[in-house]
Amino acid sequence: MRASWKRVQCVLATGMILGLLALTSGCETNPYTGRSQLLMTSVAEEMQMGAQAYNQVKSDPKMKASQDPREVEPVKRVAARIVEAAKRSKYAEMAQQFQWEVTVIKDDKTMNAFALPGGKMAVYTGIFPVAKTEAGLAAVMGHEVVHALARHGAERMSQGQLTNAALQVAGAAAGAGGGGGLMSQAAMAALGVGAQVGVLLPFSRKHESEADYIGILLAADAGYDPRESVHLWERMEQLSSGGGPSEFLSTHPGHDTRIEQLKKWMPEAMAIYQKRQPLPTAELPPVGR
Image (cartoon, rainbow, N blue to C red; front, side, top):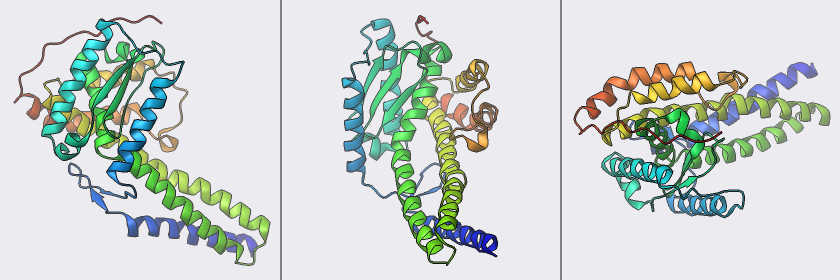
């Protein structure tokens, strides 16, 4: 009987979480995908947090900014063109508000880049071998810029805040159900895993796919061949050791899923690219390992 009641509590509590998310979503609508977004912070607050995070990264004594023009100039060139495309996009108003800045971090072992709310960007030199060309780098930077413009970070924070609040309500309900302390703790543990896999991770995967889609549109509008995004992820797949989490338990789509989605979106991106003056293919500089 207790086990049955615990299952009822889990179902009810999980339903409360999903119900709260459904009731409070729709505060904003993504202008490209039409997806409703839950946002509980202001753009000004996000920009302030982005600037603080950026300053922390730059002040980290372990972080070394590249001074090599061969590394810095292509990144700045791609960043400037992606930003100009963003200012022509459906995010034009947001892009105009941002104070754009980019730093090249000399770290040949880190394949990463990021863009924070407010337009603060960083590219690690370790991404150069997998990006290979400026067009590949444009796919990376377009993706990261969309995360900032689409307010994905704020959306994740809002979802986390709401889920934590719902879990507290669910915990109180489970404790009041007469099942005893141990049963309540077990229910809370199950709800924590259920909420993470069933609610937060799928939203994160949606963010990644959304950034892939809009990112190649920005790259194409900037004059970079969007087909290079497919080659980028094919190279990333080859470099992958295969030891990562399954797609179901990952915040990122699997490489195969990502490549197939990019191919599906490619006709739209190519239609934009063909209206622009294509940029010549430029190789990124080699880096040491």
